Amino acid sequence: MNYEHVSAADLIRELTGRTISPLPRLRAIARDPDILLEIQGVSKKVVHRIEAALELGRRYVAEPDIDPVLISSPEDIDRIYGPRLRDRDHEPLLSQHSSDAPPQYVK
Image 1 (spheres, rainbow, N blue to C red):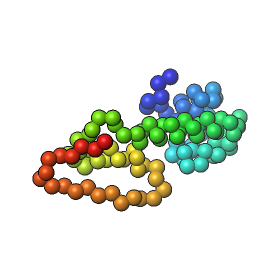
Image 2 (tube, helix red, strand yellow):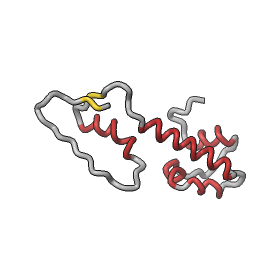
Image 3 (cartoon, helix red, strand yellow):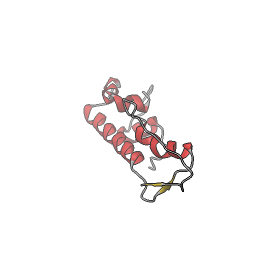
Image 4 (cartoon, rainbow, N blue to C red):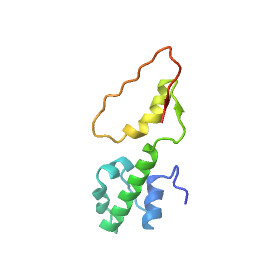
């Protein structure tokens, strides 16, 4: 199964073999995976598998590109740093400095 663009329900069904409804949102599961224990038939072992899958996904999305990326707009910054900052429990201070200098590449 290709997991790109897969819904939470499909991911849980693939990992557990069960259809689960109603299902908490993925962000809620990522913050507190034990909420899945409230679902009949979901064991601690299954919760750990789902937690591991979510962590792998988080690391994949946050992993920097191998090739340098040109930053030329605020949208580029959001595309590059958004996934790295999305699930933080605090807001870090980030700064972008613009000038007439040539564009900079980020690794």
